[in-house]
Amino acid sequence: MKPTVAIVDIDSYSEALNIIGGINDLNLPDKNLTIKVGIYNTETKICTTVKTLNSIIKSFNKALDIKVVESDSGAGLGLDRLKIWEACYNNRITPFNLSNDEITRDVNVAGEVNPLSHVLFKPNVFISTHVPRRYENTGDEDMMNMGSIIKNLLGLIPDTKKFRFHKKLPNALLDMYEAIGGIDLAILDGTQVYLGRETERTTTSPKILVVGKDAFAVEAVGAYLVGFEPTEMPILQEAAKRGLGEIDIKRINIVGDTSEPKNMISQAFQNLIK
Image (cartoon, rainbow, N blue to C red):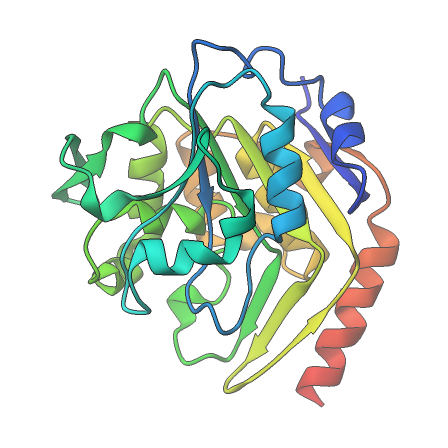
């Protein structure tokens, strides 16, 4: 059966959930929710918006405990960077620094053992949310087309020297994906799409959400929208070898328009590289 990926207007998150079959199997009082947001440098604000994060949180109205998580990195402490979403927090929804957790499980990540936070593992529901993005000629070819949803998992490493995995990123990310039991829901927030080239960067605003339960299908659709061929991306090629999800656009049931946002993103990127 083809996985379904919904592309909807930025205000239509609930519609996206209906398209992909709902989240009744995930939104349960006996399942806590862990949301891995992606943010490196808070000055760039290349991340899921407060509005979209609030929509995600509201859809999980039965979860008794919701943690929005990040780890320490070279750009700063996890809790400091999570302040971008402070409007979302309350007694039930809290920021959580993966680097400070004392309850961990050792996981083999690309040949080395790393202690991952207990909040990442099942039976917790795990969501990965980030923005569609594309890098070009950045000087680090290994990082150029690693996507967003799966690349977001690098932040599960609790220490700040995450760069050591850059040369073996597909294996590192997928080792963690498998260890935590996968991603239950993937959301690309296309309020803004990030495009980078060398020291230049720009954004464009298709104002869409890309949502699905097959994280690799969502990653593939996001990659397609920013101009990559998903089946040529190292991270998705390795996922296909491991049988983890669908990466071929032709085998994904895409509900929604791809042409308009793809054209908008392509034009913004062409303007950047002129």
